[in-house]
Every structure is written in structure tokens, then in C-alpha cells.
Image (cartoon, rainbow, N blue to C red; front, side, top):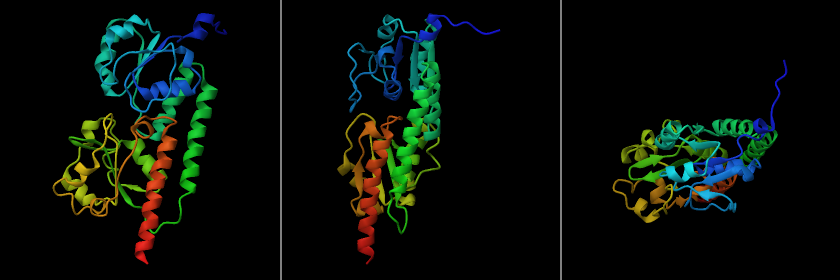
Length: 276
């Protein structure tokens, strides 16, 4: 027997609150702008503005009352950071979804899931294909290298937190080798805490940092006790990466891969010159 769908079924969810910028940006790219009614405020680098969308507080501290007041059909968040607010919303009988993507492949699956939820499956497929093709072009554009430089990516500075899996994937695409692949698979930052001894042992050629909502103090990295013999420190290869192109999983990661690729290519060319 063929199911009969009502207009209400087809339009659901018409009112979506996004608790994270990656969800907001992906839904925007899928053509769901008119369905988004709430998003987090204060994320540096956000350039998308939709007049009817209300701010519902910061990513780490969303405002429960502001969300409920919007009468959402569904609230979509990311990671364990959403756990407490989601539990409260469930008790308030609000539909919720929490995504847990750590790698590029998991991001593609999340895009597909959001596409199905919002009846944008074709758009979701097109977006993931665009991302894959963009990364393939960057990977193919790398010059011949004597070696892939070892890269340490720092997501937070107190304590030191190394990059998540999608950052590790981007480092590989851009031509580097992530020095902390053994730590990157956990989406939880507290499971990616590292020590000075581990960084010294990894001996990264390049240090990249993006401190999740605050500016990177490169000079403070340079002055860290015990770090002076790390190649990236002694040779001055420390760079800040804008958070909006590396910490927000979605289409912006293509720009992040280009950014890292430029840094790695410059390092490689410098090493070639010094080796002659």
C-alpha cells in the first residue's frame, strides 16, 4: 500500500534551530535558509546573514528559553557540548538531533543525513561531490616533495589540544603529515590533550594553531619551556589558521585546505633551496 504524504509531512521541519555554525552553514548551502530560525551568536568569521534568524546564545552556552520561544520543529547540534541543553529540550518535548562527525567521511555522512531530513538529498549529494572534487584538486596540485613535513595542529593552548580527525585529513590533503594521528580520532577535546614531551618527540616541521574562538599568540608558543629545539620553533614555522576555515566542518574546509597547502608548499620550497 502506497503511503500518502500530506503537505505538513513534506514541509517538516519548517522551523530549525542550529546550535553550531557547521550545521548552520551546511543547511544554508543546501538551500534551507528560509527554514533556519535560530543560530549561535558570536562565532568569529561568520559571513552569512539571514534577516529572520534569531541568535540563541553562544555555541558553548545556548539560551534554553530563547530556543523554546522560537517554537522549533527540530534543534540540531554537534558533539557532547550540546548534551546538557539537548537533555533539557527533550524533557520539554522538543525534537533534537546531535551530530558526531570527526572525519571528512563522517562530515559527508552528516551532510547526507541533513539532506534527507530537509528533503534536499540531491543538494546534499552535490555539496559532498563539490567538497571531494575541491580536495582532489588541492591534493593533485602539490609539487613533488622530498618529504612530507610533519605538522602539529593545536586546537587549544591550555591544556594543549591537538587537532580532530578532519583537521588531520586536511593536513594530509594539503601535503603534510599529522604528527598526532594517534590522537585525532576522538571528537572530545579532552581526549586529545598532549604534553610538551609528546610534541618534542614528534618534532614537527610546522606548527599550525587555531584556538577555537580566541586569537593565537604565536610568541607565547615560541617561548614555551622545552619547545626551543622543536624544528618548527627553531626555524620559525608557526602559523595561525582562521578558525572559520578549519574548525567548522563543512564547505569552508576547502578554503582551509588551500590555506594549509600554501603554507606547506612554501615550507617545501624553502627546504629545497636550503638543501642545495
